[in-house]
Length: 85
Image 1 (cartoon, helix red, strand yellow):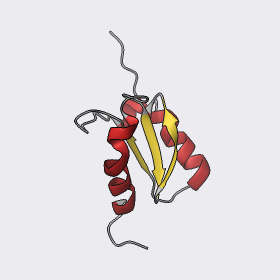
Image 2 (cartoon, rainbow, N blue to C red; image 1 turned 120 degrees about the vertical axis):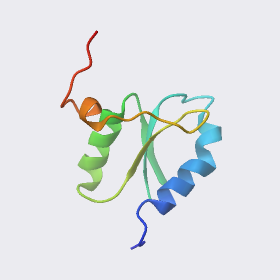
Image 3 (tube, helix red, strand yellow; image 1 turned 30 degrees about the vertical axis):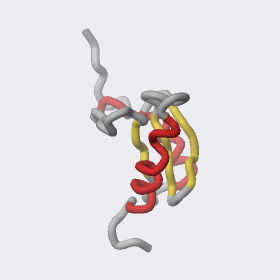
Image 4 (cartoon, rainbow, N blue to C red; image 1 turned 135 degrees about the vertical axis):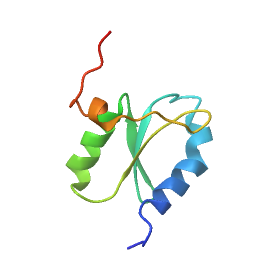
């Protein structure tokens, strides 16, 4: 097992993000090792799928964006908090 978690997943994401942008902008990806497990509408959907498939083992959930930045508030995306106007 790698000493630094998610190195393979992060490298895989960075290598492929430009090819995903045209068809999957702002989608969330689930990656384990060098395998793309799917695209999702929300962080919570991707995370739930990762937990169902892999349990308590490392996997990467990241948003497909032009600049690679994401805003992630886990309590909001998992339903612990609710954003309202």
